[in-house]
Image (cartoon, rainbow, N blue to C red):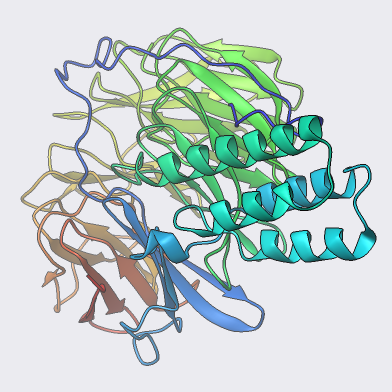
Length: 454
């Protein structure tokens, strides 16, 4: 990852090689297009319920958490409509303020005035010129003034350009352990830490390659992968890189953390197990094609689907295969494990329920949704909630795979994003259209919708 160079404060992390765009062995001829892959993320920030919803290259913070109290009046959106009124990141403001403190021959009162101007500094507009004019009259030496002015120009250009390099948000939105910060990846490689209460950026980094998956968060460390065939660990507070690991293919899925291990899939057809220092423990490489699905970990096994139409159970200790299940098309959706059963949806339109230990079917037959399924399912209201790509949403009996009497309900047009829940009876569906669908799964499915601000 890289950030603009600022004297004495921000270390240049170096440019990373841009990865190839094609799916290596998966049979896809082009990278994905902006269609809303990021699932909604409910979170409580400063005691207030908020649902974060991405649509193409915008992120909205909607107040409330259930269908009864959600509102289309967004608390904020990122990036803002008026970029001239959007403040620089907290990290940039702190760095520039530190540079002002280091000016020689400038009175303390003048430093205080300059630092107040930094708090009013925006990524665009006239505020930068006003601050640099004030520096000219501050009493600072020419060398120090020019150095600080150059830092202002460099960082503001970087942050302004970053807002224009979004294209789409696909990956899972990460949330800090204190529920104060959201971590966001963009398809063109920009990554952001954003204050959930205000929408203010805390820091911005350039990953150097496109990012399809999102952030996995543990404590003060973030993990994510790129199309540049790398996995990164970065400091959640600063965005600085801790380590990197190179794969043999692009990484499209969000890593999964389990205990002392990070599991990462790659389009090279491998599932990697890494320790917390970034060293490889083992790699399962028996898949016959690329893997773009996020794995699921339960008990002694890791479950992951592949573009070779198979779902695999992999031994967590050594990466050997326990069993595999063949479907009629790709497994791209994240599998879900519940009470010893693995629920996995395929692009063949079917939902499979198999014994986690043996791979044997637990339903009389797979459930046929009638359309491809890209979204990871969720458990809510005592049932398995599944969204087909054509917009139909089903509630299935966990034991039998039978749909309830109210299924399906329609939740928008094309659905690609994983489903998310409030942990009880509310399911959030993010379709291709600029709408958040909210489903009450407490009994028969009941659907409402909230248009996103435009």
